[in-house]
Every structure is written in C-alpha cells, then in structure tokens.
Image (tube, rainbow, N blue to C red; front, side):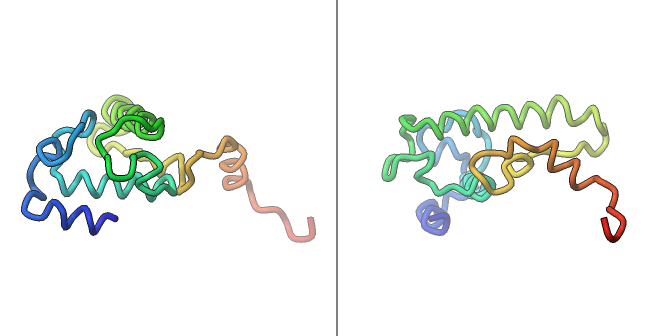
Length: 128
C-alpha cells in the first residue's frame, strides 16, 4: 500500500502533507513523502494495516477509533520527546516512538516491569 500511495503523490512528495492529503490535523508540516513513511512506521510499530485506522477508500474519515487513538498517541509521543527527554540529555536527548512500547503489537505489554526485571536479572548459576 505504501508504494501505491507514493505513486499517487508522485511530483508532490516534497509538498506539505496537509496540501496533498485531506484532514491532516496532527502531523502538519511533514512533507507528503515523510507523512506516508510515518504512517508506514506506525503500521510496523503496531502490527497494523492501513484499515486498522482508516476507512478503505476514505482515508480522511475520522469514523474509526484507531485513527483518533493514533492522533492522541502521536501528540503524547511528541510531547514526551519535546518536554521530557531533553531532561535526560540536553545535547542529544533520546527519543521514544510507538515501537518503544508496542514492539510491533497493537497492544503494548502490560508486564513491562516483569520483562525488564527478567532481562536485567543476574545469570543463574549452572544447575539451579
């Protein structure tokens, strides 16, 4: 689908996304090509297809909850990256993304602490 969208916007890749697509509310200022790539990144981070958030044939529609949730999450991620992450390093702040929590699944693990504890646990001695 991404290749099809890129073909549809051929010649307008560097135009602002809001000039090429309808109903852009949160990601204004991205080029059309960057916007399509961002949508692809969202899909990969969530294990989603376009139609999880968009009505097939009417990408501008706001009727699906997935799209409304994605907008909210996009704002949250941008706020964390702009406000909180620079507190960790002013010169090269780390960045979070959808993948930070979702790891390719539509629902982030609710057992993050347990997973981190397991990753950081000291190795068990042989035979235990």
